Length: 433
Image (cartoon, rainbow, N blue to C red; front, side, top):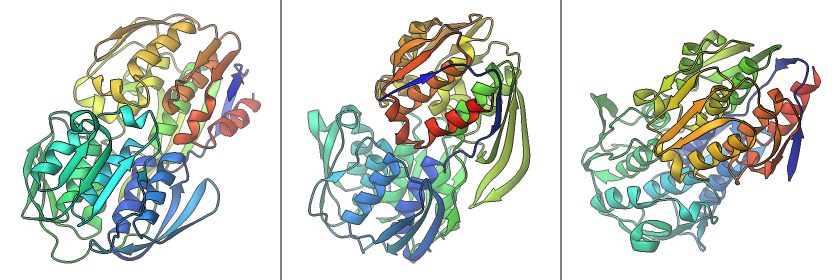
C-alpha cells in the first residue's frame, strides 16, 4: 500500500494518539501470570500487541477485546503455574518485545516452547536473552549458534543471578525480571544506562518486592502470586513524537496531544526538542495506571541544531527517525550518536532512515552508531519506501506534511504495527488546513 501526502496550508487540531505499545505488552503479560481478572483500558490494538495476546491464548490465558482502536482488554490471570504448553509454535509476528519478554516468562515453565516470527523478526539477535536465561537454569536454543529465532525453550527450576547488561535494553531487562519472578533467590540486573522502567513500575504495583539500588534493579522471590492490575494505558509518546515534529517544522501549526505518557525514562524526545528551541508546552500533569501523563501542545518553531547521545539515547531510541526529520530541516549540523541498537530493528533503521531522507533531498551522513545531518531549507518530496518499518513510514509521512512537493510512501501499511489509525489521523489533521 502507498500513501500520498502534500503539505497543508495549516496544521492545527487535536490528535489522540493510541495507547502506549510498551505498556500494553506488559499489562497483558504481567496480568496473564497474576492470579485473577483485570481490565486494561486503552489497550493498543496494533499488530505487535495482538501478537502478544495470541501467544498468551495459545498458552491457556483467557482474554477478550472490546472496541476498536482504543480497546478494553479483559484478561483472566492464571498465576505463575497456570500456563500450559502450546500445541503449536508461538508466533510473535514482527514483535521483538513479544519474543523477548515472553521468553522470560517461559524460561520458568516446565514445558517446551518454540517462538518464531516473520522474516524480519527472525533476523533480529536473540543471543542477548539466551545467555542470561541459560545462566538462570533454563534450556534455550536458537538458530545460527543460538543467535537468531526460532528459539526453543525448555523451562524449569530457575535460580536468581546478578547480570550486567552489555547493552542497554529494556526488553532484555524485562525478560530477566519476568524470569526472576519464578526463580529461587534474588535477581539483580545492572544497566549501563537507565532504560524505560514500565516493567518495574507495574511489578511494584502488583506486589513484587523490587527496588533500584544505584544502577542495579533487585527483585526478591515472590512469597505470593502477583495481584492483578486494572489500568488505563497512557497515550504512546513514541506515536506523539511524529506530531510534535510535524508541528515544530510546519510554518503554521498548533497540535494538541492529550493524555500522553511522559515517563522520564521515555521523554527524551521532549527534552531534545525543547533544547533545540521547540515551542512545546506540558500541562495537566497527573498519574494514570502508575505512569505520569500530561497534555502536550506543540507549535511552529525555529529550531537550532543539537548533539544527541549519551544517557538521553535510551530515552528516545524509538524516536530517532522522527528526530532525524526535524534535524533535516534545522539549519546547522545535528549529530546523533550511541544509537547502534537501531541497526537491528525492523530494518537497519540507521541505514534506511539515512537513505530515504537523502532520497527526499536531505543531507544525511550515516555513522556506525548514528547519523550526522546538515539541515537544508526545504525538502522536495518524492517517492520513498518504509522498508517494512513502522517508525520510518510515519517519519516519511511527516516529511510529506512539510515538503515542497508530493511525497509518496510505499509500504505505508507498516504503520499499523504500532499506530493503526495513523493515516486517518493524518488525513483529518491535514484537512483542517
